[in-house]
View 1 (cartoon, rainbow, N blue to C red):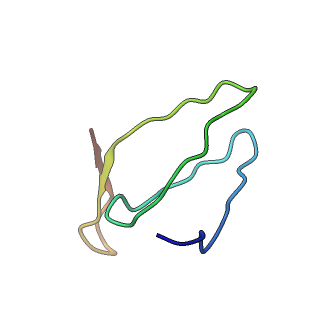
View 2: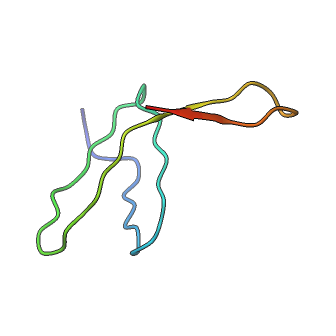
Length: 54
């Protein structure tokens, strides 16, 4: 797969949104607890609200 194109180090309270269709990896949390949630966000156009479901 090769080396990563980017490495992101989020700070506490940061929100990261990843496209699951793109290959990605998450390093293990070594000394701090981490919360991970999975969900879907639907985009229906610029004039309509986003839809959130899991």
